Image (cartoon, rainbow, N blue to C red; front, side, top):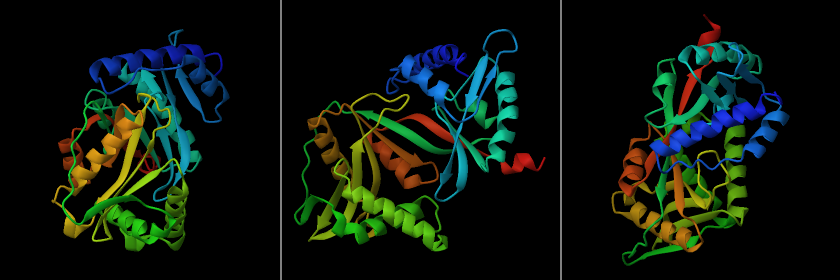
Length: 304
């Protein structure tokens, strides 16, 4: 693995350069040294096709536990490369049994939106979520109607944040009533930690001192395909009786102004493809898809 790291890093660098040429919101910033070090020290399996005497492709996936779906395996934009479709097929044929042996139920992969998805959908993968980006290159003039106010949520707001989280789950097709007590408590613990984190900002929109909307932001950690100085926007929710009143738009524009003032140049958001209101909102705000996440069950393959 250590021997192959430099050649794989070179392939990933070329791939990112191609992606950035196709989509300006994708960054080709890439530290080969850091990537090579990560490959050389990883505990996860890495497959390489070098049947022709040179590397024609690679496939890497990290298997982790997911709160709702159990163990799954993820491959980022740097987790694969292939010169020909049959090379990808050969790599997957070797990887799937290993991932299943680790208890993984599915493989998820990030691919460039539009240009990079067909090779995966042709192999039974389904698009499940989208990464979208926007350049923060303008200042917004935001006016709130009488009675509305903004503040930062804190630990004492946990109950309201949990309600907003359940609203988001429902919009994404999660049957909240079916969640096990352990799953509910894990979610509460995550939200409690978020509210205690000084690097996370949970915006609350209130109407007559009652929360009607929320949104969480934080500086995005280094991630393949993202620019530095990117703010991550998540957990946006508006109380049902207050929807379609431009609250989300005003809130996001306020967030963009704050992020720009703090030195951010880009914002990123992710949404589930089945969440139609979110798809419409983020597109209307100006977010453009950069990568999509595709999923294929490994269970049905084991039955063949």
